[in-house]
Each structure stands twice: as C-alpha cells, then as structure tokens.
Amino acid sequence: MRSDDSEQRLAAARDAIARAARRADRRPDAVELVAVSKMHDADTIRPVLRAGQRVFGENRVQEAAAKWPQLREETPDIRLHLVGRLQSNKADDAVALFDVIHSLDRPSLVKALAKAMDVAGRRPSCFVQVNIGAEAQKGGCPIGELSDLLEQARSVDLPVIGLMCVPPLDVEPAPYFALLAKLARDHGLGGLSMGMSGDYETAVTLGATHVRVGTALFGART
Image (cartoon, rainbow, N blue to C red):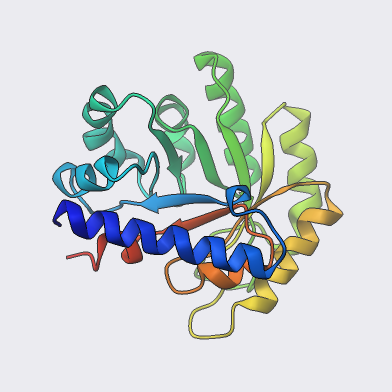
C-alpha cells in the first residue's frame, strides 16, 4: 500500500467517525479507532503508522509477537489491542504484549489472565466479549452469564473497562449494538468495543468507544 493511500483511508475513516459522532451529539475524540492489522505484514503497517495511526489490533498472539516488537522499537508510542479470541495457555504472552484485551469471555480465562497479570506486574485493560447473537460458532460470554463473569473478574482485580461484541453477519447490527450498550449501562461499564469496517458508523451513533476497523484502512487481506 502506498503511503498516500494510507493517509487517504485513515483520513476517510476518521472523518466518518467524526460525522457519526456528531449525529449522535457525541465528541469525535470519545471514539478510539483501532486499526486491525491481522494478516498484514510490517511493510503494510508502516505507511499507516507514518500517516499518524498509533492504535492497532491483532487477532492472534503469535502473529502479533512476530511483527510488533520491531515496529514498537521504531515507533514506541504504539498501543496494541488483542481483538481475537484468546486461549488460556496464551495468557502470559498476551499480557506481556498487549495493552488492551477485548476477548475476555469465560471463567478459565479470568483465572489465567489474573495469574499472568500478577506475575508480569502489568494489567492490560479488558473488555468482556458478549455473544450478543447467541451464536454457537462464536466466542463470547452468554448474556445470561455476564453478571457472574463480571463478578469473577472484579473479584480478582481484572481491569474490566467495558463490553465487546461481534453481531451476526448479514443482519442489521443496530439492535445488537443497542443491546450491548444497555448491558454495559446496567453493569456500570463505560467502554463499548463494537463496530467493524462495514458498520462502525452505526456503532458510533449507538455509543461505541472503540471501533475495530481493518479492511477500510488496509484493503482486502490476501
């Protein structure tokens, strides 16, 4: 990707976020753009960094570990988000590498992350992923188990800042975003990680604090 393409795509995404925020009477700077760089190599990411983006998301711990240490040496103020499902046996690596984890979704992961954070002496912020569409093939905490999972996370001092969801494909996402926002309010949480390349403007109008945008910034993955 040429650097000028990156600048244009990044500017377009930021403008779209700002327009959506203003429609909802929100401040544009209340929404953080997470550039999802999964399956893109360092040479593809660097133009986006040069264009001014500093917050990035990855789906897999192993892939992130292979490319981000070098990029962080070059650009130290990067913040890295894990937006994909996390295996409990990767908790130590995730805590060492990421600043924010979006996929806390089960009691075993609560225990693994708490232990890893205690050992590492650092506490990445966490979103609890909710299976908002009750889809068997997707990760995420069932809605009916959310209160218990949050209680477990708080009991071991995990820094839970909000909720995350991925709505079902090919249906109107707005009702699912609205439901996630209600669940967050009901549980006293301010963070909402929702919205991807195809629906992030809708998510912003419904309260998203973090939008996870990949294709709109990097183009289609090969």
